[in-house]
Amino acid sequence: MTDQSDALYLDVVVRLRQAIADGVYPPGSRLPSEHVLAQEYGVSRNTVRRALEVLREDGLMASQQGARRTVLALPRLQSFGELRSFSRWARSIGEVPSGRVDVLERRPADLAEAHALGLEPGDPVVRLVRVRLLTGVPVMIERTVYPERVGALFAFVDLERESICERLEEHGIVFAHAEHTIDAVSADAEDARLLEIEAGTALLRERRRSTDHQGRPLEWSQDRYVGDAVAFTIRNSVAASPLVRDRPPATGK
Amino acid sequence: MTDQSDALYLDVVVRLRQAIADGVYPPGSRLPSEHVLAQEYGVSRNTVRRALEVLREDGLMASQQGARRTVLALPRLQSFGELRSFSRWARSIGEVPSGRVDVLERRPADLAEAHALGLEPGDPVVRLVRVRLLTGVPVMIERTVYPERVGALFAFVDLERESICERLEEHGIVFAHAEHTIDAVSADAEDARLLEIEAGTALLRERRRSTDHQGRPLEWSQDRYVGDAVAFTIRNSVAASPLVRDRPPATGK
DNA sequence: GTTGGAAACTTGTAGGTACAGGTTGTAGCT
DNA sequence: AGCTACAACCTGTACCTACAAGTTTCCAAC
Image 1 (cartoon, rainbow over the protein chains, first blue to last red):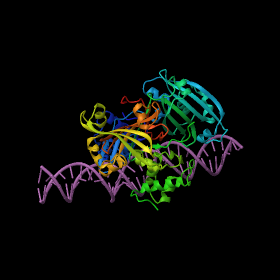
Image 2: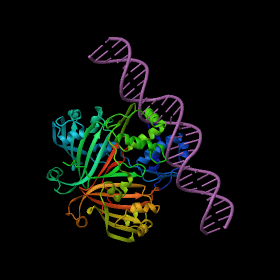
Image 3: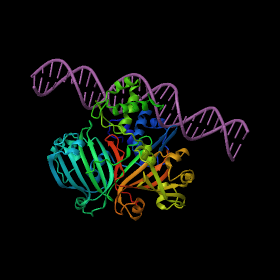
Image 4: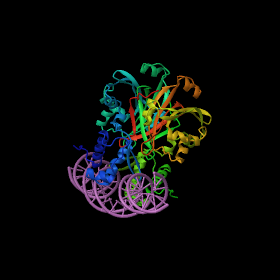
């Protein structure tokens, strides 16, 4: 009944998340104390704390010194995987993902691209422009630049149907970190053509730099979503706050 | 030279962050091992790990079992405080914040408001519409609904000049958690009038539900930012991912 | 009934130990 | 030179103890 993961605290995470989803600890209620949970699951208080830390990062839990923890929300079943991969996300909401390649070229990096990918200007990069569709309806334009060592592997990927990042993982390329910048722009003529909408429509722009475990850049992407097709959600708290309000960087193309 | 915080690991966080900012450990380099850092700072390995965990949550650090930690990025100096409070954020980037109250009324909650604030329809709420300005230029419309116990305290706040959330903290109301949903919309006629822009311009919409430590709703807000005035930035990783891509909720006004 | 304060409880911090499992570098062999 | 195998090293997990600091509960005094 417990899961197959080797880490004990992940077991506890799964079981607690399930208990919350099952209504054992509804939102607004208070969890039993760490001491009690430790006894209940047969682990040490440290291990329970480690598990609760994960739930707190997910925004399910509030904690306050001296008082028992409060359940804030019901768990959602998404992961970094779904964030990284349009395909994975699409499938998780029951839609059929696909892609239409508009541009795929190998060319020397310009200044901005070189800077974003940690290369020298002129180094070869692979540029890919794809329109992404949910069950046939265009919802996003993806304009991405990859360093050559990544782009070279595209020979093995069916770009119209497969998930790049899922396939690259099989070749040892792991998208481990990402920095996202989100703002709003109006659709220009090309956006309008590709997304089959009117020019001037509000689009959600996500600029993203992804790296591997060592921080080596793997992609630099500028995605534009149709406004009413997607939204991004973040939970945060005083204790841990990854979301930042910024002046818009002057990287805009 | 160390800071005034009582928690030892926060001391280590501050000193490590400073060391990274000073170029002692530049991005891409590897940190000394936990053991070495522990000796260096005169604390236990546990305490160092606690500190490194904070830096990892900030996206400054990558870690991989067996290998030393990699520095990913230079630290930025923002906090949840700056995210919660427009005023605090504005001051942190050297601008002068102000506000122009458009609507301030006490009225019964409608269905959506009651649901968002955990009240019964008809319960009294306080609605506030403000235009927020940076050094005199309108950049945001804030449409917020507060439960009465919070709105009642507005008598003590100068809404045109002061930060609500800073003042409320003095009365024991702490904005501890928030859930943000971000998407793009076009400016309608009222948006255009208040922000002094053309109708149809792309706006960044942030819908936010803030709660206190116990998860009791404190505000429900729908903010609209001028597209080129702000952007939101998030860093995430396989290990910890607070950002979620969503279908847009059907809460839209 | 209300209020004040002490006691019990709960989370946060700091330290320790031990071992598992991954990575890195070295030394020696082919 | 290149490859392999091993040793050293490093992070991740799990357990333990002790105390600090905050909250809740409850009882006694007013």
